[in-house]
Structure formats: C-alpha cells, structure tokens
Length: 199
Length: 199
DNA sequence: ACGCTACTTGACCGCCTGGTCAAGGGGCCG
DNA sequence: CGGCCCCTTGACCAGGCGGTCAAGTAGCGT
Image (cartoon, rainbow over all chains, first blue to last red; front, side):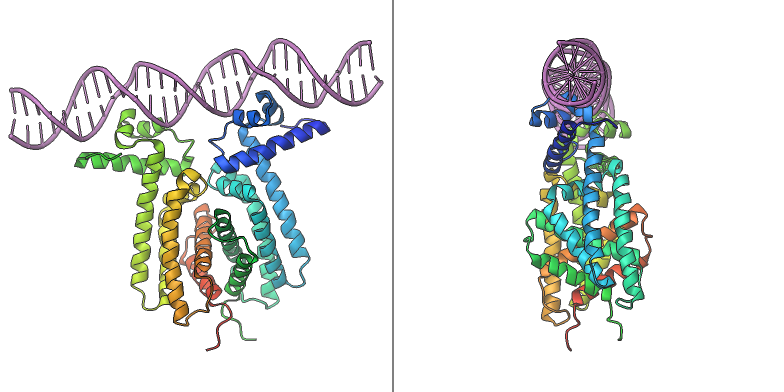
C-alpha cells in the first residue's frame, strides 16, 4: 500500500501499528483478528484497510520498523568503539539492551522466525546485522585480538547467546539486571578468545 | 483424551501425529487445518477427534513426545561421560545432533516457544534440561574445572548457542558438518572457562 | 462558500474453521 | 454365528475470519 498520508493519517497508521504490535505480541499473530484491532482502537474496520493491504502486510511493516530501529542502535554503538573487540562488546550490549527494552518487538521477531511468510524479510535484516558483526570480528582477528575462525559462524553464536538470554529475562527466569548482560558479554568474549593465543 | 487403543488404534494415532508434525512444521500450526490433516491421510474427520480432543492437544502430545526423546538422548550422553566437563561437551553434542536430525521437531519447539498456549509445557521440559545442565556445570565448578559462576545463566547461554546455530543449519546458512558442532563446543567451553583460572 | 480529497463507517460477503454426531462397518471373542 | 466394542464416515453446525464497498464526514486549499 502506497498512499499519500496527511499528518493525521500518519498518526492513525502509527496507532494501528502500535496497538497491533501489542496484541500480536500478547495474543499471537494468527489468533488476533483485524476486527479485534479496529475495535480495540474504536474505529471502523475500513480504517484498517485504508492503511494496509492485509494483516500480513501490517506485520511486515511492524517488523521492518523494529529492525530498522535495532540496527540503528547497533551501528551507533559499534561506531563509537575504540577497537574491534570494544566494538564487539558494544554491539552485544546494545543489542541486548534494545531487546530487553522492547519485549513486544522481540516477541514478534521470535514468532516471525517460525513462519515462512515473514521469515524472508527478517532473515535479510538479520543477515545484515550478522554481516556487520562478522566484519567487526574479522577486524579483531586481523588485529590479532582474537584467534582466527569462521566469523559468520561466531557471529551467530553471539546472536544465539544474546537472544536466548534476553528471552529468559522476558520470561522472568532471569532478572533484567546488568549482571545478565555482563555475564553474556564475558561468556561471549571468552568464547571468541578461545585458547588465549600466546602473546 | 484417555482411550483404550488397540494395536491398530495406536498406529493410527502415530500416523496422525507424524503427518501433523510434518504439516505443522512446514505450514505453521494455525494455518494448518484439521481437515487438511485428515484429508492428507485419506480418512474422515471423525478419526481425528477419536484420538485427540482438539488440535491444540495434538500439538501438545507431539511436543511432549519430542521432548522426551531429546531428554533421553541428552541423559544417555551425559551419563557416559568421564568428567563433568566431558559431560558438558557430550550433552552439547548430543543436543545439537538430535536437533539437526529432527528439523520438524526443532521447528515446532521454536514455534511453541512463541505461543503461550504451548509455552507452559515446553518451559517445564526446558527447565528440566537446563537444571540437568546446571547440575553438571556446578559439578565442574566444584571440581575446579571451570571458574564459579551462575550455573543456570550459563546453561542458558549454552542452550542459546546450540539453538541458534542449529537454526542456521536448518535454514541452510551453515552447512550441517561436524565443524559447526565442533566450533559451537569450542566456543562454549572457552566461554565457560572464562579467564583460565590460575592452576 | 465550495469542492476536492483524505479519511471513516459498518453492513455485508463467501469461505473456511474447529468441532459434533448419528449411523455404519469390521474384526475379534465367545 | 452373534454380539460387542473399537474405529470410521462425512454431512452438518455455529461462528468467526479476512477482506470489500457504497455511502458519508471532515478538514484544507482556494
């Protein structure tokens, strides 16, 4: 859907996305109906289809927005780092903090990863983030800060730690203290370090 | 549903579960209808409701079966290990191998984790596995094989690496070679080792 | 004040869903 | 051969779904 929107229109669109994000995250995408969204906002059903072609497109738009926001934060964190290994730590911290601050988006990412209808767009974004991380890792390897290895694979390992730990925080299994992030960072850095190379 | 089943009945039940596993994994749980399952098997719809109370219960049964199988494999692997740190490695390898061998189950786990209707049972099982792992980690800490730390948190970190890497394998991002498992094991062991304690 | 366009309404549609059930096999045991 | 119980059938149901649309409203530029 490509429509010229006034200020008011943009606001409505934002409302729909915000409310849907909440409902999708709490109830699940499939079980949440379009009627539920419009009724929750107290508007007619037609409003929804004025702004979005379908329920599917709405979720895609939400995911794209969220990914953009996350990537922005990651890049800002990494760009301010002094060395490659500082960049790794900064990126890791930034990702976890963002994910902890945005439980709904995080949940939606998790769901989207299980559904091929959304997986595509998601993976493209994830691939970009992983490539960013892999680049930093490669730089760290070149600088001799960490031993050589498959940078892509290692990036995924970092992402895995990050993701799973955040999930536990959202579930209440772990407390959302800085300790979790510190522990994750420490685990990851030492995992990357491997047998500390003779220096 | 608690019904006395003959041999033939058990077989049908198994067919339903096997076929549904496949469809749910490929198409998603919500988008797959009960009719699709029975038609795919060439049986009347009533058959389904003879063996299961609802679509939801079917998935729960599938998940429970899968979890049981995975846990069995993990425990067998860990019990054959010589030392705690060997146990960690063996458990890690066993989990990853199982997950790579059972893409459909793995996919279903991933989905179930995003839906509160199934999350409960899943988490109970995951909690058990994590507790098992944490116990091994604690033993390794007591034995001085790895530095002290939050065993539960670290178990989740291991699980995160495991899970995410397997996911990439299933997506075709990484090849299903032993290299992936080796790299994961190495990453995890060094992550646990942390600053190699003075010995 | 007019008109244009952005927006909103809610009844309506066809379809499909999960789930039910009366009726009818079919195999096994006595 | 008779009866029993496990299993199977598929038409049927109420309800909800995503999506449409003709009709109206409101605000802005002129």
